[in-house]
Image 1 (cartoon, helix red, strand yellow):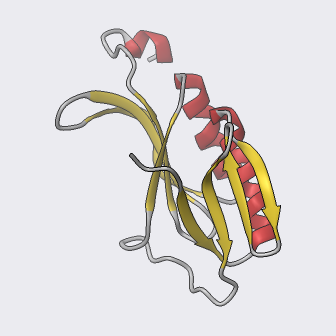
Image 2 (cartoon, rainbow, N blue to C red):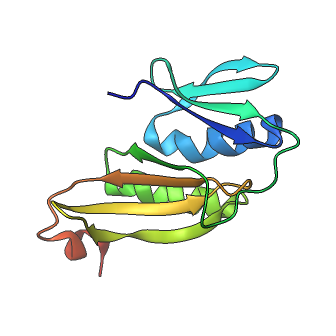
Length: 134
């Protein structure tokens, strides 16, 4: 089991502000702020931002991919909308997706440094079109 994940960011203050807004719909908040890192989580830091001021932007075909569980479809929609409004890039809008073993609802964004973030849940997808208003 994974305890926490760390990702590099060029501007810790700006990234911390971005992540605080983007992760709020998922129930995460900034729990630890230090000069070179910030920790986000629900009860303890599960996602760390590490200051890497000399780091180049992460190319789209490389870097990390962090997936966080959401409790609701609405939380995923909010995660995506806030991320794009706050300077992140859309990397896959909220939608039902088919994986090898299950269908799930998820959205993908790139943070200002190019790190790929996903929020997902595994709902009952039988009537998800009706739930999403499509």
